Length: 154
Image 1 (cartoon, one colour):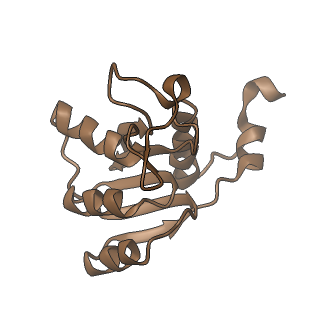
Image 2 (cartoon, rainbow, N blue to C red; image 1 turned 180 degrees about the horizontal axis):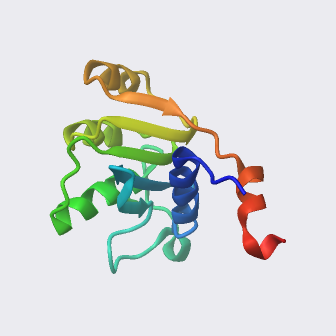
Image 3 (cartoon, rainbow, N blue to C red; image 1 turned 90 degrees about the horizontal axis):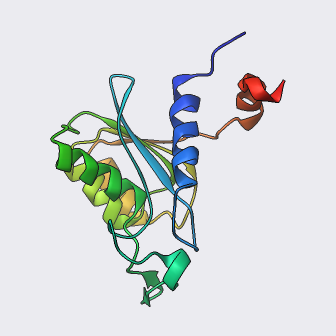
């Protein structure tokens, strides 16, 4: 039996993390990787101990939910909280990062962004990634290949 690729493995982790999302608008997961090792993961949701969108509804200002912390930011903040360096790391995300998360990814020293789905890809985010020499690549999760590997599916 052939193993799945690293990209498929890390992307699958993102989709698994997204299942913990408390956002009712879009479930997003992010995985930060360095040297083929997962150093952090995040999903979009509220602050620890705070009200969640699934319980209280979204808090919308200018068509954005301000209750939610994005998955990428949660993963980066997890690294900061526990003293894990992100310089030279890679991030896998279920969806293309928003402009603010794109800037945080660049500032965190993350050098590669792999994402699964386009989602309001902001042209300035694309430009900033190019300026910062951050490699950005779309990676489709090959669910058929992963389904075959699951032992309980046999």
